[in-house]
Length: 117
Image (tube, rainbow, N blue to C red; front, side, top):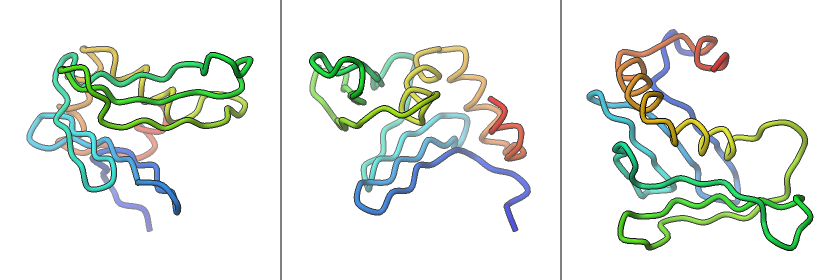
């Protein structure tokens, strides 16, 4: 049975680190494998870009620190429609979405509401 309320989203993969975005105590947190990062208004910066020489068929997902270093990078082939990495980068780029989600997810929301976002 699915839980009544959820506090975040996750991408679980067998061969790669799992990625989880969740809220705790009114703050969004990003967890990649065993590494955790608190998300503030603009840090860390989460991006999803097209790979240069791939004719748009590959994308690169990166998590950059405020000091300019790369905390995580993942290159992948694109499929059809919006994918998890593009969704995550687009949403976390919006400070209003970050603060609203941190508040709502801390309290817990129905899974179907989260899926509709």
